[in-house]
Length: 294
Ligand SMILES: NC(=O)c1ccc[n+]([C@@H]2O[C@H](COP(=O)([O-])OP(=O)(O)OC[C@H]3O[C@@H](n4cnc5c(N)ncnc54)[C@H](O)[C@@H]3O)[C@@H](O)[C@H]2O)c1
Image 1: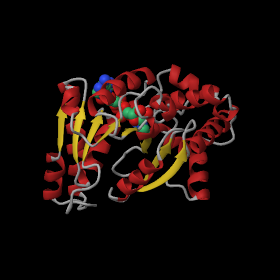
Image 2: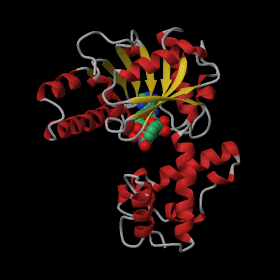
Image 3: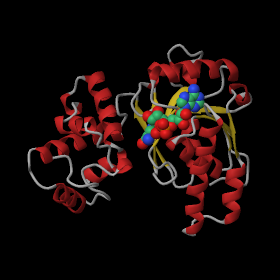
Image 4: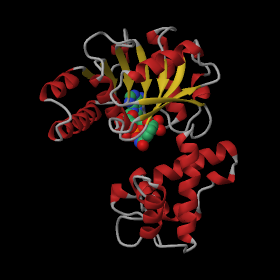
């Protein structure tokens, strides 16, 4: 963590203060950076601040964070609903709703405001970074900076090199991630799922299919993979945490982009989402609620 000197990319213009935006704001503020968060309205800003506050409080309660560090991290984050307040930021990091048209329209407006030299980063999970960069002035300053959920806790950050991303930007992003507490960066190609999700999605799809085929109970599948492979959580409990709808959306997008059958959503997953079973967030999933999906 770098709080003693002014870090590179010292003021981040963050677009979106939802689940990921709140976590990223916390991580950036904890590294000594100022964060200006853009949201659609005041209520969303308040919700974002509440998420950051609760996460920092948990850090204090667990003894990982001092009261002082909590207060100064929060003080480095400001919220706005006006794009013009992003003038003067040293980098833009977008983490708005996963919708390509929305992201492109917003980035076009923000790019016109901040000028051609300011790095533009995206936290998209499933969209092509190259595609988001196309049409923006100077696409060499565009890259993916992909955090995992929850951003304050998950250590890996994928630096996504799009077709036009400049080498100098890649170097700067490695240096940036080094200043983020406990984070490690990996450099990945701009392809559906990047690296982690490209490998995770077929694994989750396979397990859902094996469960539907009756290979074992949900509990036993999770226990076998958790204990057998030394993973922290079983695949079905992980799916519940991710959200069945979120995984379905991601794996469908990867399938559309690649036509690779490993990404084709298993029929049970579709049925569960159609039935409103979304996982932990509504208490109905493979390992939450009554009977997982059958
Ligand atoms: N949730 C995850 O597990 C996860 C993990 C890694 C990456 N991502 C990616 O992060 C991004 C955000 O995901 P999330 O889970 O935080 O979504 P979310 O729905 O929790 O938050 C998105 C936020 O964007 C805001 N927003 C929408 N349009 C806006 C605009 N024009 N200007 C400013 N703000 C706007 C919304 O009000 C909302 O608060 C997506 O691209 C997603 O793919 C998500």
